[in-house]
Amino acid sequence: MQALFQSEQTGEPAEVVVSQFQRHRLGTQPGDGGFEEGRVPEADAPLFSAIVTRVARNAEEVDRLLSQHLARDWPLAKLDPVLRALLRAACGELWGGKEPPARVVINEYLDVAHGFFGGDESRFANGVLDAMARALRAEEFSGPSRRRGG
Image (tube, rainbow, N blue to C red; front, side, top):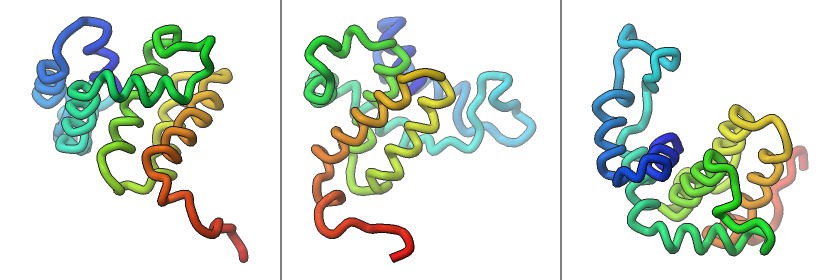
């Protein structure tokens, strides 16, 4: 998400931003610093690269998919840039295959949304992510519902 945000804000190609993240922020070892120093330890570098690259290479399609799940009076360009990057990253991950399950992807991105936003943005993201997941991975949402406790 941060890489997509950076690429959009600076105009740098996604490949350049991915390279910067891989050199300076991903794959650090304990003692190399942590979040407080702008580093993200224990990141899945191949997954990170795949998501950012997939979104960048398919930007028009990703934005079209997202736009289908937004209200007409709230086009993608009108969204907060952080929220836009979050939704694009989630779309890239959902579009990438069957793992992790769609519900896991939604929950992970909602956790991130809660970290950035304190208002209605998280609920908004939940609605968009759920609709997008149902469109991209319909088979995961078909069949009998799974209820807890019975």
